[in-house]
Image (cartoon, rainbow, N blue to C red; front, side):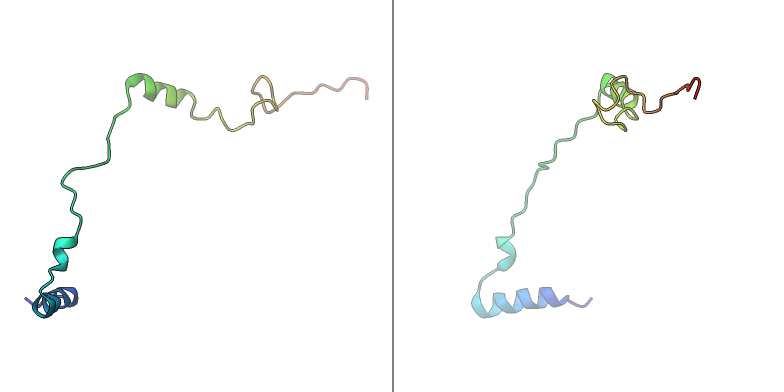
Length: 74
C-alpha cells in the first residue's frame, strides 16, 4: 500500500527534527455528549403542543386565527 501525503510529511518531520506530531493530538477516550431519551410524558406533551404555536400569543386571545363574521343588514 502507498502512504498518504500527510503520513509522508509526518514521517519526514520525525526523521529530520525528531518531533512526533501525532503525539500532540488530543484524543478523548470518552464521549462528552450526554444522551437522554424522552419520557412518555415528554413525548405526549410534545405531540400535544406540536401544532399549537403557529399563531402569535396575545393576537388572538382564544387561539383561533379565523373568525366567522355575520353581517346583518348591510
